[in-house]
Amino acid sequence: MNGEINLKKFLNIMRKRILTIITTVLCVSIITSIVSVYYMKQTYEATENILIGKLANDDSRYGDSQELSMLLASTMDLIKSPIVLNSVRQELNINEDELEKKIVVQNNKNSQIVNVVVRDNDIEAAKKLANTVAVTSVNKMTQLFGVQNIKLLSDINGEPSAKKVGSATLNIAISIVVGFFLGVGLSMFREYWDDSIKDVKEIEYILGLPVLGEINLKNKRGKSKNKRGTTQPGQVLNRGNGGQMSV
Image 1 (cartoon, rainbow, N blue to C red):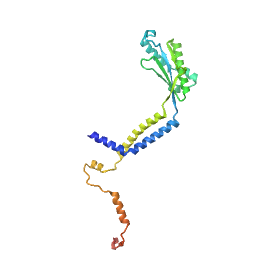
Image 2: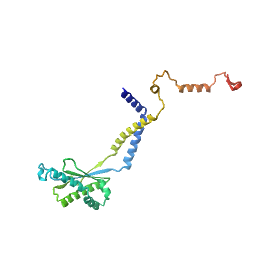
Image 3: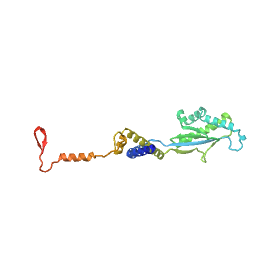
Image 4: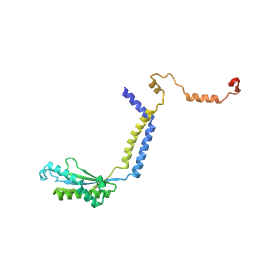
């Protein structure tokens, strides 16, 4: 029963503060739209794939699963190591800190493929960096460790696959949800600090007593003003002794 009362009270607050919620949603959405369209740069993600070992059912052709796991881990460590990054940095003339932030190395469980993912605001720069990192890693693995069963997997054009990351539509959709919850929180905050009594039910709830009647003070005040501001025909207001008014 208490849960039902609390739910009704919550819904009443939402109905009473609906203007606050709508205003908050609109403000957050408009700000997000402006930032997404005019200030945020489009981000692109390029992915280059490296195959470790041979895709065969017989694991004995490239060693047992433990050996393959060690080879995968070694390849992933090598990609992010100074051996590879320094070569890439010198070739593309990229800052070291910026280079490390752009590169992400991924490997799905039970997969022989290592993904080199690069994010950049320029799609061509992202493709070139992903390809350079992958090629350099394969060459280093072959030269330093003598690994032969490692090769690059590219698409038909021989370029890394690339796609857009995020969009203005997605940002606006997220902002609507965030704005709604922010509006609800703001409504609850305003309701908590609002001590004014809005209707008879609130008086009954606070006092625990039924209200026998109510007086419309607005209409009464209006009538009293009209009475004080007008005089009936034939009436004269006189000031008697002692400063009192008489008719």
